[in-house]
Length: 289
Image 1 (cartoon, rainbow, N blue to C red):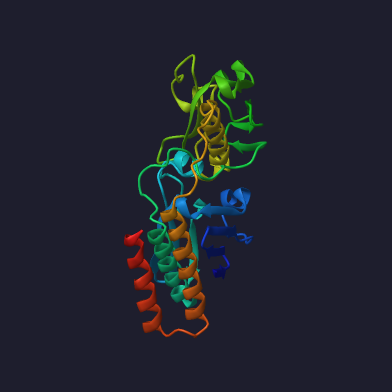
Image 2: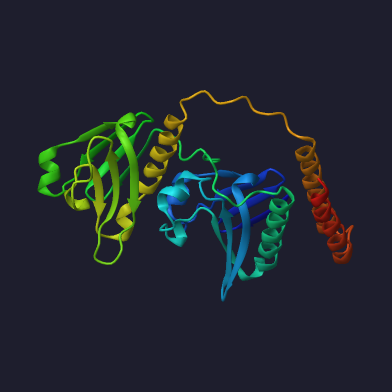
């Protein structure tokens, strides 16, 4: 097991995946604090990178497409400080961060994690009930129902329409966009029965905000709704899970041996050269399974 603890939070890596705990300081983004602890399974990853900078750098996970409802609803538009899969690392911990990124890549390679899109989410999404206030309204979601209520900042058309409430089964989708330039940020709910109603600030099925920080934790509500929509779409009985094949059992064993080698290397039992040679031998064996 490998761990890195910095002011921005902590990451712990083992053979099953990565555990992420956000920091509690004032500089940690509210989205990460509200989301809380995460456990990212190994098969949801395609790798990790360390991105150096003048002050240190960032350790960043690369997730498989379709693995995480938050990543899906954010569609690559989540700001760097709000990204739970990005850890700010000070200069003095750069070597540890580079080592962890390499270890994650080795585990992913050894497990033969495919890079193609996941057929279903591997992370559960934010827990419900969940709510957020953003710009002109407040949205709440209890797992089966979405409710929108308007603040004093809402346009007259939204106030005239009054509070809105939708069943999850009535939704065709959910769309989140951050505020950018002169455009509004928005959390919009698409109903099966009708299309969107114009601009975000005029659509009574849509929260909107004109300043980036006023988006609050709305993206987490969007992710929670998206995760439950996916569950709703899987109502049909699922086929029985197949027993693990001998090759998958062998890969699991090699992954655990790689983790053991990492522990021996960190404790000084293995030199850099011995560790590199042993690791290469394990990675080569994966082709024999």
